[in-house]
Image (cartoon, rainbow, N blue to C red; front, side, top):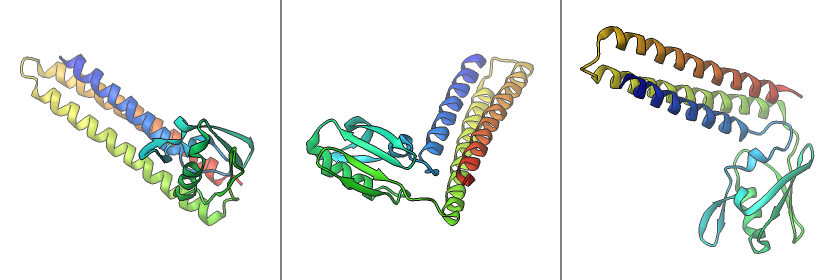
Length: 183
């Protein structure tokens, strides 16, 4: 019973940590990264489809990304989706075969905005971890056939897991901030 509650909580915390790292990856730094385009949805035959499912992405240069669609008929829609993407400010060109995306240099002001955005995403991830911890603690308290000592030990394990995941989010946040502030 206790091990099930702890295992479920740790699994959910691992997933929350992965989501936070993915969110950090979608915030733009000085170089073009295919992760920036991971959450862009393209209207493909009336259905919102992730860009990664419609095209291959590669970056031949630091600030340039080449988007090669698998289906050439989706080229215009892919271009529209990239232009409409928030926080990119990219110059987009279409030559009929590929979409070339060039990201402008980040100004210091824009870098600071992105640092604030990343910190906000980090705080949201920590809130998600705290909610998982609270639910697991409630589940532990609801167990009637288990002794108080066992529940106390389980709560300490839960706190240790929560602290480890919060520390991992803080580490990822520091790495992303240093990437953003690097000129």
